[in-house]
Image 1 (cartoon, rainbow, N blue to C red):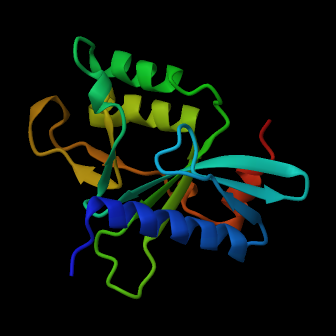
Image 2: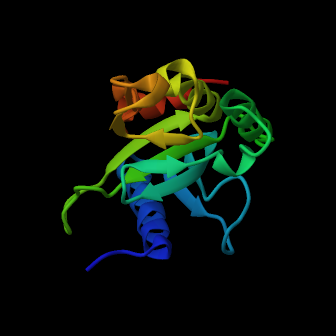
Length: 167
């Protein structure tokens, strides 16, 4: 059985909510489909973070491609970044690729500025509008370069504390 895009989104959001609860956070889910800016709010003590959840089953997440027309890659990424009113929103990227049914998908946490900087460093620093978990460029200006999500973005209690301690 294969998940469709809606099922990937539902599974990713539920999984991230469960992970935050597992580390002792209270989790609130924003009411209504396709709400702007964030999907969940995770709180621990008196600190809260808005969480935007993005699920994938193919190894990547398309983020700024819709903003590329008439712009170079860095300009499209800047436009994506500037669309975020709240720059402290935490992105939770959930990857189901190669995660068998019943096993845990991989989850990465980062803030908007980290995503934008990573996208700009992609494709041998020429930039790219999609985030890739691990991708080796086979041709073009980025031939033989590797785009990979930083290890320190992995969902861990330490990563949560890093993000919670930022202002």
